[in-house]
Image (cartoon, rainbow, N blue to C red):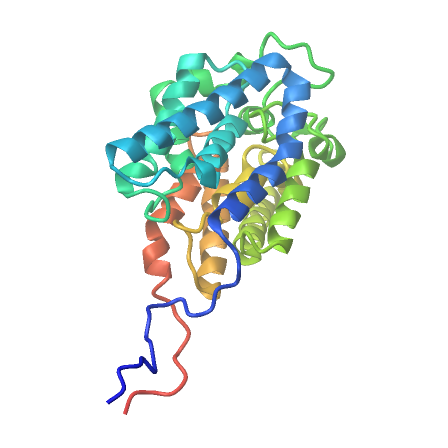
Length: 319
């Protein structure tokens, strides 16, 4: 009898779409560059220092964890650099060097490798580290205090803190065009609305992220903010303001669509994104934090496995 193998069975996936991890990671880095560039222009050398320190620390931490766990080095796939960049985008330009390093180490070690490395993390690593820093050292995450010494050409008070503490009238000077052009204080890479939207459209066009998550999150923000605004227009700002301030756009295009911590089926994706938008607005308007996006991301990461149990019915049935 011939010993020639006529049929070989292997595990899924059976059809590769030619995408790969480095392509996606470097694509997301390029998509974030316009927003990061404006932040560096706006805040100067301190912002550039924070970005380079965060990215460098993330790559070093990734290499050390690869050595400690005796795994193949993965620093060239771009994931560590992406995490470092995203972390730097969310923090003030004046963040002390040791806070930048601690936060980046928390991102890579606690947020990623403690759970088994890339693809095994149930929560977005950057959201984990940012919430840990916010709870541990809230003064360093306070944009009003951190950026007080900058002389900017616009109102240098964090828009969400104005809205939360003083109501709608206090933020009337922030027009949608100003917010789109980055005329607001915030994280190094989280204020340039036009750049973040352009980067998000690029990521969706390249299919690096799923549009269901991003658009349903923005819709959740919009609808919830609209309900609050209609109920008390003097107290709660309108939906367009909330779409263009804080971490909304970074969360929509760079945090929520993380492959490891988000659903894989379309209907769960829509629920996941809309739920995050609803929670973010609840926290912003009636919670204790000025911006609820990061906490909303973590909460929806937590329920992600339950959402993914909602699956389409299989075609046919087993006899």
